[in-house]
Length: 337
Image 1 (cartoon, one colour):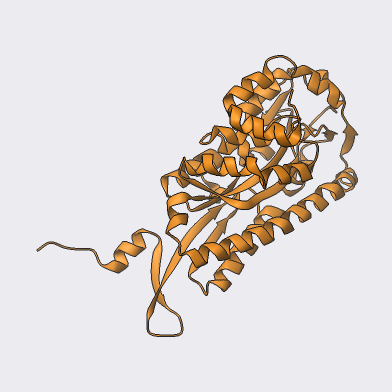
Image 2 (cartoon, rainbow, N blue to C red):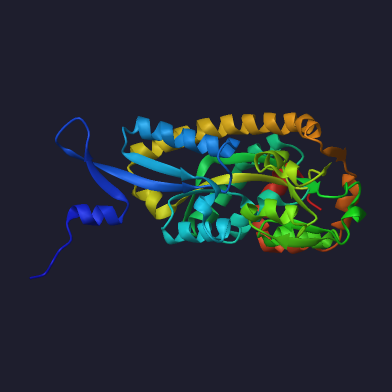
């Protein structure tokens, strides 16, 4: 006799369960995972837990998402998690454009060096035609990028173990940890440094053991990952902007009922705004707090960095990112390069 799996078994295989809410009738519930590379206590982790707690309440438990800090210690970290999401083995993820570009090349536009004059400009571009184009590029690759789902990380600064960076020549020969994205590597090679790609969960140990001379990230990363314990100098360069895109597996997202998707979208918008403000405030306060922790902070000569990029750096990345995303960026930010 042919065995047919039960409806309960089929739903369980899709991450769906059946339970009763206030009546004997069974209700459909969706369970899912959210990965983020930041630790417990970071503004981003807090925002994500707040989003999913509100969604759980407002859907009366129909969507129950568990947030896993530091990508649940997944081997391979962000790149591996992105592959899981595209394969449908992870439902939700928060990832910066420079790493999402492994699947969606146009996403590198978010981290283009010295492209943005202010954080306000970044948000305006993402809420406009550039953001909608990036949404469509993600959709074509099985990824749903949520509207108004761009969390703040901030402008990236140089963070060194043994020397301050006053001008670009101070980077010559220095081993700088960078995320596993080609734009990061190309940028630092162009500046004369030696980029070393490491996942963020390996960063503290690499700095402590001297396997790298420094790293580059917004100040909030130095604080939440306790890098002040293993580095001495921060040089304010504002060389790239970075943030985290709230993304979902497109098939999973499309399978959720419309009312649940509306509830998720409403809470993403609310808590993205709160996280942006909290992160901006923290980055400002940290210029004083990190000095109190014993770090030395200086403002670098940014013009010397820009001068190194004259030549083929921007033409090379215009080709990689694509002319459509590039032109939409320049419409809002002015000519690049």
